[in-house]
Length: 264
Image (tube, rainbow, N blue to C red):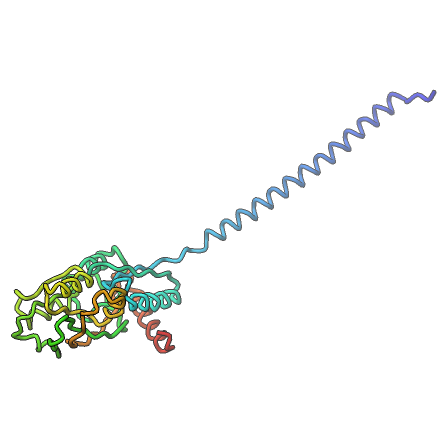
């Protein structure tokens, strides 16, 4: 019977062990290399993701109620303008005075639509964008259609109880010039004013004619309320908080461009 030389057998065993160790070493090195590469790529991808800045959202406020068609139209116009400038946009509705206070204090980024000459002493932190957002007519509304209004002066000397929405600064400033203060009624919102007209607790309500686009005017809830005249035409502008001073001119240019395109 053939006998294996113990010396050669030991050499073969040692050689086999060395070969296995080399294979194991190569496998470990390869695995470690792949782990480093994979981790590096994942880290690079994560780092690249973190380098992409999240778009800032510009929030403007307005006295207009959300159920008014013009609210949606104005929101769409601003959304398009700010999107082209690299921002997201949101329009919120607030009572008139609260809207101005929050815009001035920087709680929001600005006011969406106000007259050219707001009280700068009262709201020193707001900067006007030098391109109008909209031109509106201010109407007089009543349930008594025998009342006829043509301009502010037609209210002079009349014993009408005249309602206005608190916070609409231009109306608050002008109405006392033509109507005795004892006949002026400040109200919290458009719908409350309509209810007051319907209940005959006021005779006339002064508000922008876009009120006719509200859902509660279109659904017939206040069908007896009619526009009995126009008191004035107003041009409204965007106002931004001073922290966005660098956006004032670009926004004006962008609004002008979009309007020239005829999209709004």
